[in-house]
Amino acid sequence: MMIEIPPKYSVAEVVQELKSVSSRWLREKFSFIEKLYEKKEGIWSVGYFVSTIGLNEEQIRRYVEKQGQWDKSRDVTAEFS
Image 1 (cartoon, rainbow, N blue to C red):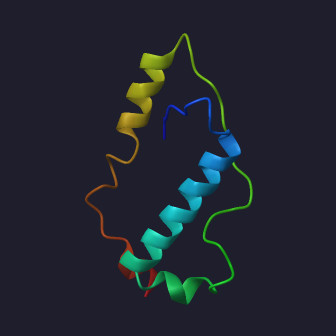
Image 2 (tube, helix red, strand yellow):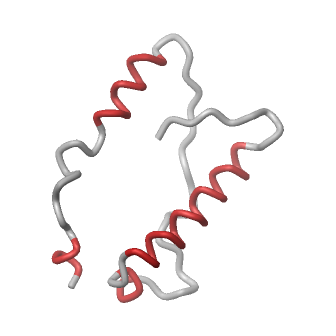
């Protein structure tokens, strides 16, 4: 994922919000997730990795855009039932 964060927000705040919102959305969309994780247990790990980009921004953008192309059409829900 490549995002631009306005200076008024800390990286930690943005990552926390992304993890919170995406976790809620995934739990609502895929009911089998409830079977894998308890409510108090998060689906994301505690930590995160963040890096800044500059000189190779276009190369990194192409890499990120190509992520997941292989598995976009695969239905993995059967693997968790």
